[in-house]
Image (cartoon, rainbow, N blue to C red; front, side, top):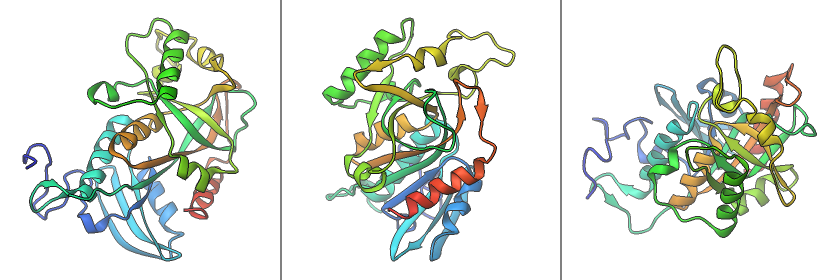
Length: 284
C-alpha cells in the first residue's frame, strides 16, 4: 500500500498537482511547456471533454479523428517533468481506492512539442527536429535508479570525456523507436542537450560570469561517430529518462526558434510552433 505522503490525493480523489482523476487522462498525451499553448493544441480537436488545471499544469482532454488525446502543460524544466511524469504514471498504474499498483500496467504515449535553439550552424530556424537521444545536464536522474542501454552508457561516457570539469554526471535517454517511426520518420533527428536553466546553464551571460563561458562552442564541437549535439532545451532528457524507467513511450519534437551559433531568433515563432503542432496531430 502506498502511503498518503508518498502519493497525495486531493479531497475529490484527484492527484495532487495535476488535479486530474484517472478517467480524465487519455493514453496518448502531448506535453507543452506553456499553459497558453494548451488551447493552441486542443483547438484542433474535434471535441474537448475535460478542461482542468492547477498552477502551471493545465490539461485538456478530447478527441481527434476518434482518438482520445490529452494535452498537458508541464511548465519549464525537468523539476516539473518529475511531477508530471510521476503523476500521469500513477493515474494509469495505481488503484487510487486501494493505493496499490495495478496488476496490469499501462504504457502511455507521450509526445513533447516544445521550442528549442539549434547549436549547429546547418540547422536553420524553422526546422522541426525530433530528438533521437537527449542528454541531461541537470540533477534529476541522480535521485533515481534506472538501467541504461549500452548505447546510452557510451554516449554518457563520451559526454563526460568531452565536457571536462563537470561536477555532476550527465544522463542519457532515448526516444521510443515506435514513436520515432510513427511520427518522425521524415523529420531530421538529433541529439538534444537538456539544461537546468535558461541563462547560465545555456551559456548565456547578461550580467553574470559563467563557469562554462564556452558552453555552446563546446557542445557544438562534440562528435560521436556521425552524431553531434543538435539543439538545446530544458525538458527532453527528463521526459525520456523517466518514461524509459516507467515503461512509457516518449518522443520530443522541437520547433527550432533560435540559432545559438549565429545569435539569431526567429521572426515568426508562433507560426513555427503551430506548424509543429499540426505536424504531430496529423500523425498521432
